[in-house]
Amino acid sequence: MTSDSFLSIDFGTSNSLVGAFHNGQRYEALPLDPKAQDPTMMRTLLYFPHPDLCYYGTEAIEQYIEQDMEGRLFRSFKSHLPNQNYLGTVLNNRILTLESLIGVFLLELKKRAEKILDTPIEKAVIGRPARYSMDPVADGFALHRMGKAAAFAGFKEVQFVPEPLAAAFDYRRQLSSEKIVLIGDFGGGTSDFTLIKLRPEGFAKEDVLAIDGCPLAGDALDSVFMSHRLNEYFGAKSRYRLPMGSNVLTMPPAVSQRLNHPAHIVHLKEKETYEFIREVKKCSLTQKDADAVERLFILIEDQQIFPFFENIEKTKRALSASETTDFIYDYPGLEMKETFSVQQFIDWATATKEKIFSALDECLKNAGVSSQQVDLVCLTGGTAKVPFIQKELETRFGKERLQTQAHFHSVLSGLTESAGFWAQGQKVT
Image (cartoon, rainbow, N blue to C red; front, side):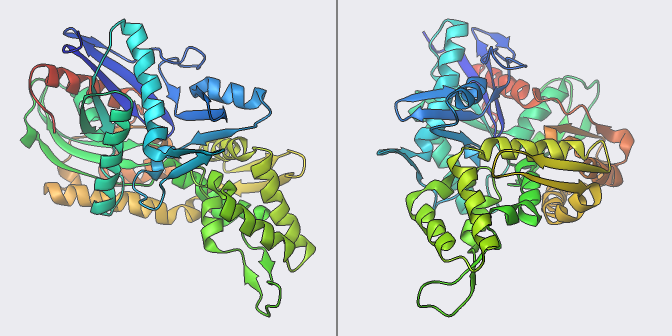
């Protein structure tokens, strides 16, 4: 019997969490990943040592390292959802669409939750960003794909609830009187905002004043270290001259842009692109140009993409605590040392920051609410802790109004509450 059982799924770019509303009872974050430091938080990772075997979460990393980084490790694959040109990937001769890739991960979450609750579950409330894309057509396409992925995982009925709205339901429990609250959900792939009237009890759809966001957050901040400095080590500026040609060419943006993003770089291994990069190396103008392209081959062939971007993320976090930090990578053939400063990070990230806060301004404008009228600002997600993001929020709203406990379970808790509404016959969206 499944009618009284609902899963709540916070499917994130970096981490995923699952709760449940089962037989009238709330189940907070379920311990789906016993090998993780926090068993309730499962890294959104898939590792295929070969096409017929897949590992998930912490075990994906363990097996990836244990098996000498052979096979394919997928991270940040959620970020491909609005990209209509990205259909999926090929594992040996097996075609994996993006919908089935996400569906495989959702199915594993479902199986583990069902085992803990000892019941089959066919209904789910799944979080969605305020916007997968700034393009409404691409945003709708992404949501359609998520619907197909959920169906692949075996869910018969699904409600998609905006993640910042879900976070609002969680924060509501802290209130003793009605307030206008801004929820800022800063994740790995998206920055999302909801302006809402919250009161201790009850909810009506008209309480939601505005929802907005943009598809930039933690991963976009990580990518600036690649795009402004580190990608030069991997041929982003390598020059070459084709046989019988007279023009000196530089590595095309289609390659260097993939190189900058953790979700996209794995696709440099796809046959056509890979053969093109091989040709660039053969036709390199100087030995220095060829050496840089060779480092790209080492990065891809020796499966160093994941640890390299993990090191970039550590560098980003280190700049929250000190004015400068050293980025050191000592894998044979990829040895490098660069010193980064907070000011460099701020300068490089300016365009990303402006787009994030432009979405916030749009949210305030659509709600007809000024920053002075906002009673409380509640933040969730790791990117909310980046100092220049914090500082910008303090400038707009004042430090005293910021609820800065950016804990990871707020969205999930609100999704579980949404599941409770659904169980009572009330839809949130």
